[in-house]
Image (cartoon, rainbow, N blue to C red; front, side):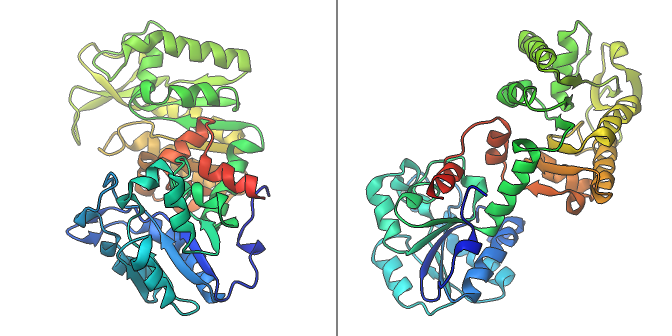
Length: 399
């Protein structure tokens, strides 16, 4: 372990513990519609509270751009946090200054206090030294449990660790341990599935993965770009024809690294993109000029599942088809269920992440069967791209 965790924290009764959490959850009409991120940080909050710490929560909500915005106040989120924790959550109308200090002074051991949106101050995203010091003045210990914000060097995600003893919360710890198993020190063979609409959004990801995995499965709309780069007509399928050279370069880099590129052999094509649209299965070199490929076909599913069966580790980001609309969800669901079965059998470590991926696994009803499913979004993608994560790197330096 290259970072300190809550296991390294002792005698914290009465200590002010600043805990960076991710409460940037979807809200509609003032009600939280998906509390997954709150549920993920609950174990850390409970553990610190039960040990008698004064638990002070730091978080952002939305993009207020350094100014107070009423509908981005964390006061909206506080009731949902209370419900999930099943304990009182106090609220302070600022994260620094007198309002924060007075609320903290009134805390009893074990209390939980939520401070106002850190992004109401310009110093948060700029990681300004004076703002960092103002935040640090409110605590004795810093715990980062927000991996999803760790790709940003903000005051509450990176700056605080320069001023206070820093530790990883339970969610951060679980995430980092899972990612280490995924690409850091994985058991081989390693298979990566990368899907989604466009190659242009995942060039860095693909270039990094071909150097680290044994097989790279490319699905979704981006597969069409690779197929077209080989001179195949993909009809009206979503395709970035201008990235043909990029696709060829990635294929060449994979060959040099000994990484197999797994592209669709067949696909499900339709003339219109809507639920229940008339469709047919064709080989990828027989896509009609007036049709578009919206999912991979049965031969492709079998090929991907064969790779998963041989693998020891699977890393997944992005669906194989337009899973949001039936019947174009079949491939993603079939492969997800196979990966889940291999994981349950103990033959596979499966790590997945990214918004569409989480939604797809939820749709396939296999999320709980994967070894780890990250809700981090951008941070998960940047980790897969091999980029440094400031909020993680500073925790490792503190050890």
